[in-house]
Structures are given as C-alpha cells and as structure tokens.
Image (cartoon, rainbow, N blue to C red; front, top):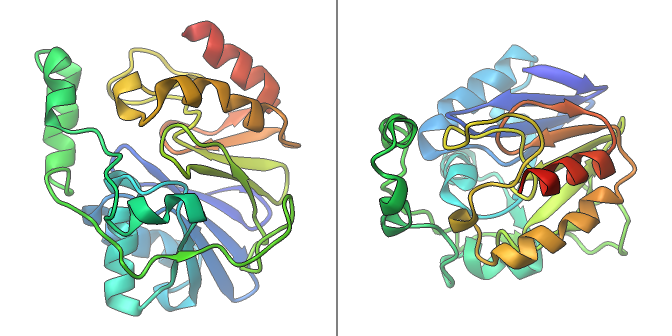
Length: 245
C-alpha cells in the first residue's frame, strides 16, 4: 500500500482501488474491491502491520460489485460492519438494482481492451451477485461533520453514479472520490481526471452535475476508485474531467 497522507493508505485490487485509514490500532476501510480481491485486501493490511480484525468498519462509496464484493467477504469472515449512505442502502441490501449489466457492454464488446478487462474481472467475481442485507447507515453526524469511525472521514454525497454514491474527505487533504471522478479505467484510452463511461452510471446527467460537490472539497489530492492518485485541486480535476467529456 502507499501512504498518501499520515494514516491514509491507498491499495489496489483488480482494476479497482480501496483505502485504509489507520488511527492507532484501529482501521477503517473505504471499499474493498471484488469478492476475489478479499485476500489481496488482507495482504495489504498485513503489509502495514494491521489485521482484518483491526478493521472497525468498511465504508462504501457505492454498492457496485467491484467495490463491495470484498466487503461482503470480509463481513462473512470477520463480521466487519459495512456502512453506506442512507440513500445507498437499498442498493447495498439488494432491494434496488443500479449496476451495469452484460447488455450495456455489447456495443463495445468487440474492442480488445474490453475483452482484456472482462477476462481479468471474470476471475474475481464480475458474474456474481452481492447483496448485503446487513449493511447499516453511516453513524449520525451533522452535515459536513466527520463520522465516528477510525480516521474521522467526512462523507460528501455526490449521487448520480448511484443514488447514494459518497465521496470522503480524509485527513491530510485527500478526497476519496469513488467512481464519481476517476483517473483511469481499462475501458478508457486515457489517464487523468475523467468520468467513467456513461453506461456505468445509474443517472449519467446527475453524475456530471454532482461533480460540483467534489470541486468544492478542501483537498489537494484525489484517491479515485479507479486509476492512480492525482495531486492538485479538486476544482482543477473536475474541470479536466468535464473538458475530457
């Protein structure tokens, strides 16, 4: 894992990322990759001297399978609480469906990069299904206040990609943007701040406008759900993403 700021660790699964917030002996995870990435998450924790049993909560940016498959596995193994924005709970619990499906990929299925990505994610759970009836809402907190979990992340609702998609403002000027704003993806031909292909989003138009919530974040580093960390102001990152279309 890479330490982006004191206690803020950035890890990678299979074409997806996760974060560990280390606060003394305790840890908060933000997302946990695919189901097949759970062992990789555990190994990442071990690399910074922590165990899965040290994780007090897994925060969900959104309940797409590539971000919560590993969370479900860790919950099964250790009983780790999984927390999501109240507006994301129906999706997380399997009561609503806001996930792209195979038909969405058909128009680009012939592209080599699509075939390579599909081959990779087939091994870690893309054909599976994750429902987390045990998912809980974030602890009560005033708007703009930190959550009472290790690392004290501040949730920033940026709905569009899913109904309750949430970014997190982290210590040291890092903002975890989830899939609202990324810096790369195997289906993309570019790197740097950008939006995911529109078919991945539940509400693409809202996904574009909700970037304003990220642009206003008091941060100087992005930790995206896909791609590499990016240094610079969130407002500049949003401008670049919008210019890229």
